[in-house]
Amino acid sequence: MLNVNKTEVKTCRMLLEQYMEGRERTAPAHKAEKLVFAGVGDRDVYNITAPFEDEGRTVIAGRVESRDSEHSQVVFFVENDGAWVPLEGAPVLELQDPFHTRIGGELIMGGVQIYPHPEKEGALMWRTAFYRGGRIADLKLFFTGPDGMKDLRLTGLPDGGIGVFTRPQGDKGGRGQIGYFQAASLDDLTVQAIEEAPLLEGQFIPEEWGGANEIHVLSNGLLGVLGHTACYDAEGDRHYYPMIFVLDPQTAAFSDMMLIAVRADFLPGPAKREDLQDVVFSGGILRRGDGTAVLYAGTSDAEAQRLIIADPFARFES
Image (tube, rainbow, N blue to C red):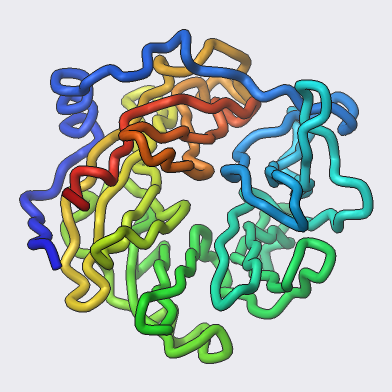
């Protein structure tokens, strides 16, 4: 196993300076591409997953939402004549921010479920919901995470266990920090174990936040974490950056975060609100095996794009 080194906590500003000063631009902005969606009326599609296979078809799941609403659906899309259209007969999930993985031969889908806040009138609360099945058509709800927790992610481990990345907020986690623990199986997931998961101390300062979006098991057994780190500026605008780090599942040692793209790398476009213009939400990444990868992301909470980048995990496998 490689030695995983963690140095001092790096703020969004530090990570941004590091990225802007030292990146190797394998994919300039003109290689960014907007994905075209049809069949959903005038609603936006954003915060997409990377493509995955289902019954011989290439599918993308996306957050489908009106520009003036937070009430969204997760729709499964297939490509047809250059546009992504809803997969006929597929379920539509009442969720935000979809994600997927495969564990033990099963497709695991999830997203953020919103519901009325139990104490604050007119406010919303959220939790992460998980579905499982052999294929999209068979998906059934099997687990719901703790109230108030987004960005729960699961991955199968080489030893047969389950790696669980958490993101508590509040007294534990502040604005949102990443935790990690292992479960023996999907059936052993519990809300209590998730709430008690140790935090990855030193990844975020208290004023900033982040979360895991997708987990890749690397060739040497390390877990490659695709995620986001975020902050407010002095005007209260939000800034979301795609980032990665790696974690050793045997020791829970983890590396520094590093940014892999910024909003300016993508094509210009509309924003859901003025304070969301500098937002990139990492949906998923396809490693292409040639030293490059394709990042699939939501931009400014209004559109879906993809961007060719240098494979950010390759350095941890060399």
